[in-house]
Image (cartoon, one colour):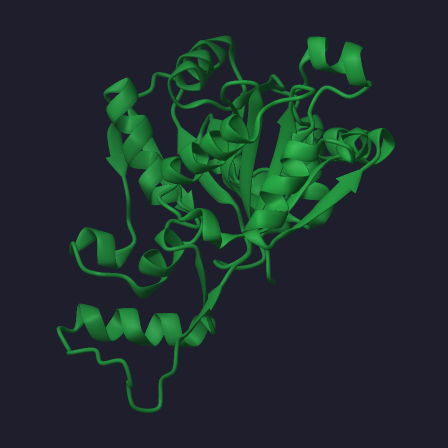
Length: 297
């Protein structure tokens, strides 16, 4: 999950640093210029998987209101007061993962988690939450509401639920990969397997690999992907640079100096398709991996 943390005050910025150090996340400090901040939120709203606002809830609501689409499309949005007393799951609690992230942050900074979705409050199973954790896309929204409401009423839910049908569509897992020249197939295999274990998914769930075009002659990488029966796509420096700018991806100065672009794995994954990161850029032995669920809406 790629996380943007927006701090309004100096006190908020210090809290942002603490949160970023614990769970990751890119900090953007925009001060009290609300119009400038609103324009910035428009730029990043669909580019990050989660937005954390350290400010008053009213400010956050006004910032995101023009860009909200729906519970299946919107990023997770969380609001935290600048003293770090309350962590509020504001938007996309289940499919977007805001509720789980709220609990994670609250535990890290010893704050009060504020979660208001009915199934969570009542400690009940939620169909959309179940789907999200398995990397499945639930639709239509009306079916999610009908099933979750029935669960809250204490009704039994069966695989065939009368006139209500909830489709759980398998999403493609995209693997962006960067590696040292001449890296062994053993290290590539170990990195991919370890990356998949971090998100509790089998390697077979990966549908496509992506990297920079200078890796076209990287035989061990090509052989690994071929043996899995998967496709690998290659992208130019310019194509990767465009995604880095668009999604405000972090770059490595060392990598940029050597190949002309400072982020291969995340940028390559996004070149394949718009996606939500299950595992942001993660370094292994001579291999860097990012895993992302392809958006299907």
